Amino acid sequence: MRCMCKAVFVAVLCLSSLPSVCAEAAGALRVATFRCDITPPLGQPMFCGDALKTIEQPLLAKGIVLEADGRRYVLCALDWCELCNGAYDEFREGVAAAAGTKPSCVALQAVHQHSAPFVDTDAQKLLAEAGAPEIHLDPEVVDAIEKRLAEAVKEAVERLEPFDRVGTGQAKVDRVASSRRPVDADGKIRTRFSSCKDPATIALPEGTIDPYLKTITLARGEKPLVRLHYYATHPQTSYGDGRASSDFVGAVREQIEREEGIFQIYFTGCAGDITAGKYNDGSKKCRKELTERLLAGMKASIAATKLAPAGEVCWRTYPLLLTPRTDPGYSLADCLAHLKNPKANPGSRLYRGAMRAAFNQRSKRPIELSSLEIGDVSILNLPGEPMICFQLFAQGLKPGVFVAVASCGDGGPGYLCSEKAFSDNGGYEQTASNVKPESEGLLKKAIEALLGVD
Image 1 (tube, one colour):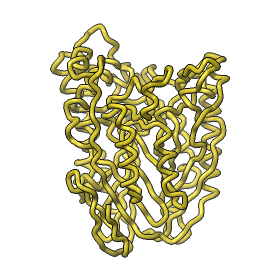
Image 2 (cartoon, rainbow, N blue to C red; image 1 turned 90 degrees about the vertical axis):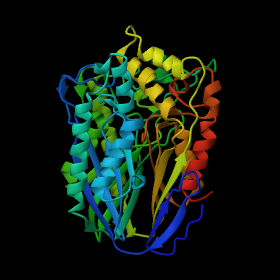
Image 3 (cartoon, one colour; image 1 turned 180 degrees about the vertical axis):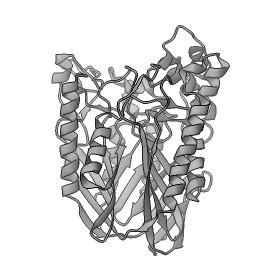
């Protein structure tokens, strides 16, 4: 990749499968925030196929439109479990049109709460053809939400205001994240899901995590305009009970916004193998404690924030082409058979059947990854559910740069695992990956290019 970063703003355009190329420009920086309620109507199916019965907290899409020399970029976090395949493309196109930019300049990331829906219009079409459309959100509901989000982005463009400083801060979060792949005395992985009640599994070490919550602040002078937070853990405590909820991460995000009066956005990092399972048994007590500890970490990260003049801006994209698995249970024929099986669990028919088949059918079309660089601050936007090793890899590539990672972009690939995970003794993540083990090397190559170190 060649990058000519001589001016305030550098745009990097992806040309098919060729390396990205930089183009020069200069100008002022502006930003605007937007929010949109993306909660489905009551009765619509959620993550586990359970019908939505009550709205504990509204599900929100929150983001920024960033403008440099008249070119606009969008970063957006959605309180959904996943946004995949055709739905991801459709939403990105709608947001891009509303912002007056190109789809390649838009990054949409699910926060990945499980008290929220999967959204995949390609999967919906397959389910409808199989006579099971009720397992997925109604297409009219998806269309209405897409239009609401686009309208919120369009309205934000009218409120763009200058910013000239970028702040960075980070702080350790105590007793929230833990590995979902702890190893017992016999060398076997004991899967520790987001909620765990087995004392022996709970007692196993916390494991490899990224303990830091990172905060990026865009400001004008000393006045913060928006804060973006990044932390790596599965963001759920309980689910499958008919609630819509942004869970403990959403509660913390909104509480900080009320207290500070500053717009707050939360992104989930590479949490494919990271959960709160060591510290959560699914009880209200544990959820309260997780909320308090994450809140303390976020406040500490804000307190540690130091502002500096905004540096050069660079937006990079990368076309990532991943090969679908063809082993038993993952082939297109197997996925189609599973989605057509009326005896299968509704959530499984959607995820392991329709969504996996939808990814298989679109797999020759690359997934476009992106990064936003402002001086010595880099934001990396990744697809699927990458394991924590990819976040640590990214941060290790540029030790002097503040690297924040958001995952759960296009959810089509499912879990993105290390090659070793496919041969480990136990573990869940590799069983929920839709791509071959070679994906580790391909994703790492993409990360290097997006961070400008290839």
